[in-house]
Length: 145
Image (cartoon, rainbow, N blue to C red; front, side, top):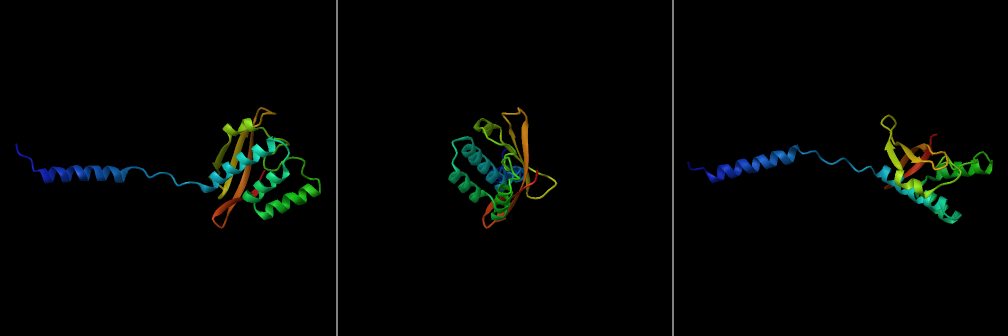
């Protein structure tokens, strides 16, 4: 039996093409979640090390809105804040970094839950944060807990 090469080739190409078109496209990159992972990794590393207010301030300015920084300063000046707002703790431990999780809230837009294992209480700490886009970058605009 003689087969027609162009017809067989065309059928093969169409099969491959249809399979490629039906494949799932990758999930979009969540730039806000990436920013939060970068912030918490850098922030916990600085907080857990020697006291270095300049590094801590630099990280905050890079990842936190001016409005939230001002609010934190007011709370600190009034002595109403006796813990770290971003960690919901008084100190930090870099051993929690491998367990750091960032999950987008399915019900609230631009809101994420940041979870890490608290080495002092041996329980997970969860912090809800709201982010906004400023220019090309995302920044933490509010801590909701």
